[in-house]
Length: 253
Length: 302
Image (tube, rainbow over the protein chains, first blue to last red):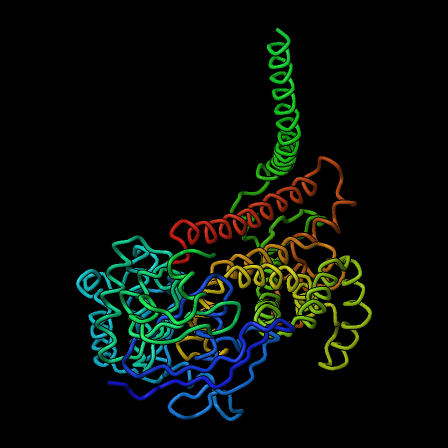
């Protein structure tokens, strides 16, 4: 039943200047599975997520130790181009952040950068991606309209579609529903369930019910350390470590 | 009873403060109104002597000849030419330096560059004019082997130096205001820094940058001292960028002292002021329109 890991972190430490945000993180992310990262604010779960596609490179004075293997290769080797990594590992952010462009141009942003020019290929990509993100029926007649006119939930699904349009292998989601209402949240959760057929998904969430609903594996973080990592069912029903149990049952925070 | 009295005294205080502020706000509006009123009162009488069309498009500005000719065509052309040429120099430099400062430069260099640009903005225009006269003019004269270095090119370069700080710092504000979210989204989609700057940051800041450009141009067209000192002062239609011109502000400043009070020449100079007033007003309205238009629909229309 166990799938091959697509991403593996080995003894990863991460520093913002002198502050150590992550300590000795070793974990496997399995292919075509949903892995949830939970823990209180500031525990390092988002930092870990942003390490996996080298988004932390954009912040000054950060430092990584250890290895992050993507398909067996350490993405922090000096000869690895972070741009290539980010094309293979897509990301969806906490706050929906569509570009101030039309819906169509939001989706075609990454494919165009990759050199796809033909109108037919782009049209097909737009339709496919929007269908995968279950947004097609709502926007198929208004593709030329600004993405800013969509509702928050639609914008977030557009951001997912935009990430899917570059055909990534992995989708990182950083609290993708924290700015959304319950109905939009439910739609995104259904979507995550469908997407895991074709993608590996790693999702950071504050919402423990969400982690329990959508994920197969859950990692619990506290103060920059991975406290417990295992099958979601086990973490939520019978955790090995007291701290995990306390957090899950809402006894500390 | 004590409470009631304190409520009343508080109300009086509030009203008083409100009115004091209103008076101060009104003061500057009244002053502006008076200036415009006198500008028109002193300028409009010239149109009893020449028609509006002859005044605006007349090719000869000989206010002291007999009979005098009051055609400010060459002055308008002079102003427009130096403004356009200086914009051609200042817009790329201003916008590109803003992009470098806001998006590319390392933090410490950024601070240094910003300080230098602010310093450039603080240079008195007479100092720039002096520089144009004694350094740039002789150099131009020798390099291009021309009759005088006080010409359109010299004035345009000096005006560009004055417009660059305006364009650069306003553009930088516009670029800085582009949400970090957009840039992160772009990087996360596998864009390089160059692609992110050109396709996301720059386009999102475009309305602010346009406003910056127009305000920079407005600054150039209204500038007096520099063009008075380095444009050469020939009130004739120029044939090349090495010819001298006499832009409107320079003409007003140079001739006002010798124009007899209340005479036709005097009225003609005020009328030139009216034209200048309308041109800068138009620039400001356009800048206002651009920034408001994009504000209303959000940056989403780009």
